[in-house]
Amino acid sequence: MKIKKFKKYCESISGTELINVGGVVGPGYGEQDLPVTLSKNDTELVYSDITDRIYSNDDYDELYNEYLKKGGSPLNGFNKENLDKVLLLISEK
Image (cartoon, rainbow, N blue to C red; front, side, top):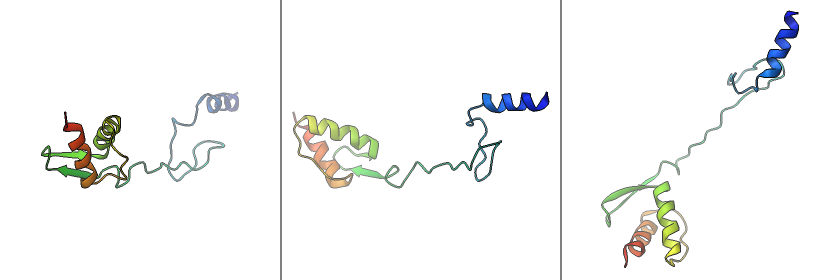
């Protein structure tokens, strides 16, 4: 009877409740590796003299989309030069 209850318990969990990095969890569960989701590109910051503000990559992506909607030409990468081009076009009336 106890084995049957344990088997039912194992079938009821999805596996995400029990995480053991580098080990084995329960019957039939392999090694669980937690991926690194941040890189240096995600934490890069650029200062702009135009607005006297620091911008992250996410901020730049939002501004870049607005820049393209206003007719700006495609730019390659998140850097100070491109950020300044984006800000100048967006600030024009």
